[in-house]
Image 1 (cartoon, one colour):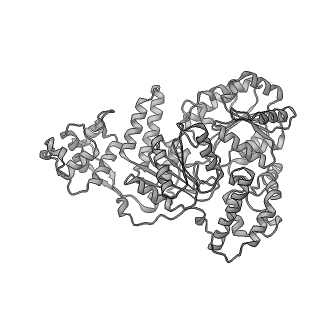
Image 2 (cartoon, rainbow, N blue to C red; image 1 turned 30 degrees about the vertical axis):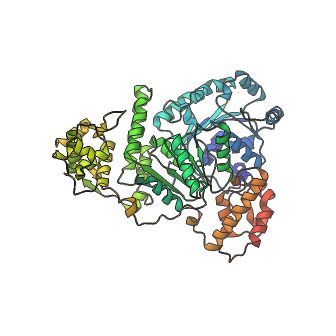
Image 3 (cartoon, rainbow, N blue to C red; image 1 turned 60 degrees about the horizontal axis):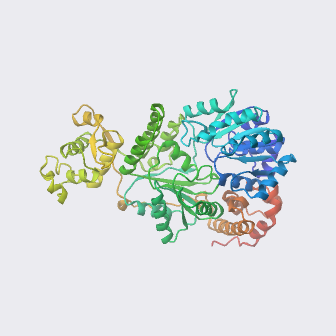
Length: 605
């Protein structure tokens, strides 16, 4: 592994391997098949890129998105590595150059989509050219249990055979045990070496809030991240566009991304997000798979995610450079009802439905949890851990109480009003709010009218949400909403079981804490170093624009942070900075040394 470690520094600028990388690279260089489950940001791509550089031959990389493939090829080209992609967006000149390099034996990595590999003539030509190994990225797409299942990935087993039963290395960030077993069965003719990396991403802060004036909650969160790049996920196309427009009007550079946009606009927005600093992309889940941007400082879910694995993969877009990153998930009763309704409408086998229900239930439980969120998240993936001490619940706590009587009042209100009304109506009945609708229906004369006036309407809404999450209430009608009592609710109502719920957190307007920015300042830079860091970001942006590449392809934020801290004075010392390899040192080193030297040490901005 001496040569591999040396190449890691000279090519990529990294002093040492991340956990798991050296084992995987050793297996790959030894010719063994490998399957690795590693969280986003743990350095999966190095595990097939470095062997391709070291022992020659061609590595065929299967990747799910054109934008991701183009991004990776540009990054490798910037490092002086011969790589190419063949896709529907490739210019004729790029295709010709890819085949020239391939025929000359100079190409080290070729990126293709699984759909492209359905072309038997292409596969046959690749076989003649000689493929050393097949690397499968986002391998959970192979599995019917994977949350991003793509049938085209199922063809990869036959592609492997057609190429001559070549070495296979496969990687994914999220896969439970059923998905892992299915991936192995689909891709590997022999049992592979398997590495299951820890799912913990300690640099990512986990925060959740019940929806309470969500636009204000989103703006308050973003106020803690001025000038930083981030992603906001929303449940619908219309909501992404509305949020992006609202944020833009308030002075934030925000762009929408969803599958309904024109192809050119969608690509343009993604390119701007990847290439520039300080952009907020507001997107549906159509955005994000394999996004190769290391300096995403936050991920905000404006609506509850569809499942625990989707949530984990989406927050994994943040903090890939190991610097602190922030997340916030907003959730509400409508989200939970929508996700359950969407699941009910899917055409699934009984076993698939069971898996999807488990994922959704785990997501709902994570929202209204009262103990450490990180501990619960890791437990879902089968990883034991201690309380993290850094999630919102570990820092702020969450009290529980015996809610049996309150639950009985809410369930009684649902029963006495005919099991057809929503949370707002039931809350009005419980607090004794004699609205026109309640008077017209005579519900102001019910025994439960005003039975909960000792608590506020908002608290009753939270109780009803938790009853729905616990399965005590269910939707009465998919078309008209409203709630009816489910069998577990009957047990509570008639005293056959007790119920413990979380004490509702204070309203957003009553919260006095100020969100602290968790971006670069949280790394511990003093005022002078922070000012130099921001200056170097501007230099980087100018270089990236002049070269037509993404800013982080020049240097990642983590590299600029270390430059600002250490203030290297010559090329030799700059070469020891994280992320400064030989190619980048030669290309950009003199400019950054000059910029650092000319920036006053006492300058605090």
